[in-house]
Amino acid sequence: MVMQRVAPAANASHELIGTSVFNRDTARATIPETGRVSLARFAWLVVAYNVAVIVWGAYVRATGSGAGCGSHWPLCNGEFLPTTPQTQTVIEFTHRVTSGVSLVLGAILLIWCWRRTAKGNWPRYSAIAAAVLLFNEALLGALLVLVDHVGGLNRYTTHALFLCLHFGNTLLLLAALALTASWLSNRDRRFGVVPRPYQTIAAGLGLVSVMVIGITGSLASLGDTIFPADSLRHAVLDDFSSSSPTLLRLRVVHPIAAVIGSLYVSWLLRVFWRKRERSTCMSLLLITLTGQIALGAMNVILLAPVWLQMTHLLVAEILWILLVLASADQLFATHHSGLRLSRNESTGPNWSLGFKTADQITRGGGPSS
Image (cartoon, rainbow, N blue to C red; front, side, top):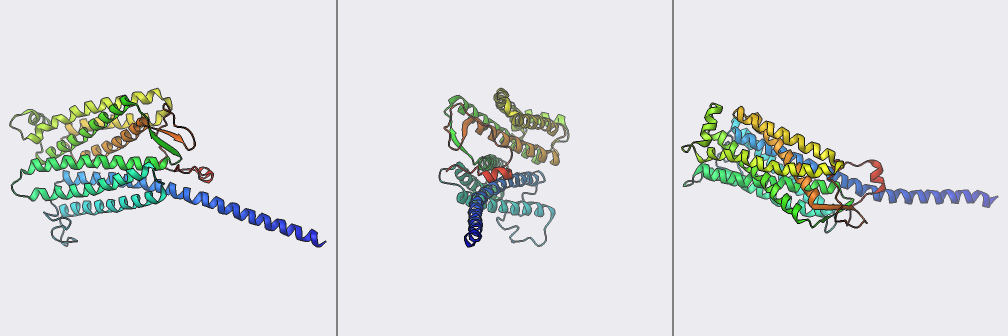
């Protein structure tokens, strides 16, 4: 009788211990993966935040508020917090504050990514590149403010030069952040460079041509802000007049660059068309490209109103991010952990932005180290 009464208790104790061990093991597998999903979501949040900061920076330029804080940097009119701000001061000061927050978010992303990823994981290096580019972004922004108040320099020429450098750095920053977020969202896969010289050259030249579109577009917007036209006819005449400022005559380069860059987008769409499972990416690229062309035409016809300039820039940034992710899909083959990398294997970017189901988290599709 004693043995019969003790055995169930022992079995119950064994079941409790086994259950406790199982729960602890499940918790160990689940918590880190949950942290990785949170990190991927945070990375996409940083991407979205920087897009908003860039669009606000365009508003600063389009409204002529860049001198709202005078020649002082990082102070605003010699003060840490402007006491009697005007509208232009508020616009410029807001841009400086939001840019400072982006630096903090970039540092958090780098530290978090460094702690959550193993040595050799690609998100580590793209996060480092993003942090460096964020610092360079702040430096170029400061120089863009200070150079306008340096005597002995051609104001328009130097402003245009630093604006080109600034916007080029901005595009590289968005590329680094988007790749970091995308790779973190695909942590259950390994990445490897596939030696395809033709695709590598095509992607490199294509992305450079798209960057030229953005840079020439920023110059065109600067010309619209400094030398506003009163009619479409006068604007077109200014573009081809030898007496017009160089900044206005450079506006014609933007549509030419847009045509060349569109050829690269068409090539990507053709590649995706062959891979019929890429319908989502192909649709996004096609919609944003069509919308961007329409916005560009409206921008010319309506003489570049501020709201349209900002919308045009926003769609341009989205298109750039999609092109970077699509190009990375062509240049880098992926495979699931434990499988051999195939030369012909290529999987598309994960458009779920790092959101996984509870079943996926419990099964533990963890990173490859």
